[in-house]
Length: 187
Image (cartoon, rainbow, N blue to C red; front, side):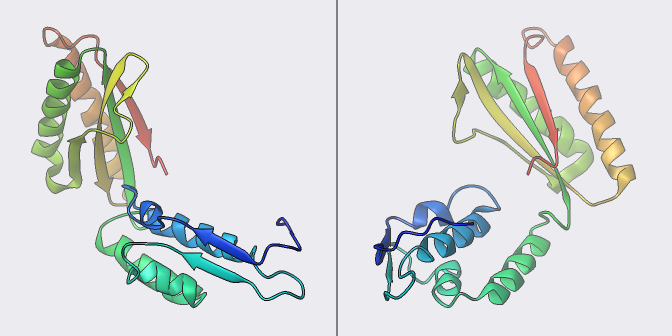
């Protein structure tokens, strides 16, 4: 059930690019949903409504699909991209987040962890990367993303590998206080 305002005849969306280019593989889906939802607020009941979308890249496929309310085209394009780039629902994700109070230490720990993972998992490991919010309270953050097939064996192997690398990292001088947060299928 949505909100119904009789007098709303114009809806504007400013800087739609921000939604479309957010560093998350789900950004196009969220942008598509939100833009369609807000456009539905204009022109309720007897009045004709207008929707104005401001963006630097008006040729973005999502904006065209919103303009045409083309759910099928959006779904097909998004499905092809997720399959091609190994994202859910076709693959599994594991997000590792390393945290430490000193930025140089979390940087070194991130590099160590990623290199150790890449030695066994190769191109399926992305990072380390500094997230959009790089510090929470007193902790600096670094993220590593692992893309896996839907194989249960591969997931179990990777979980054991993460624990081994974590134990090895903790044994290194100066790294015992690095925190690791593991999130399987974080999205």
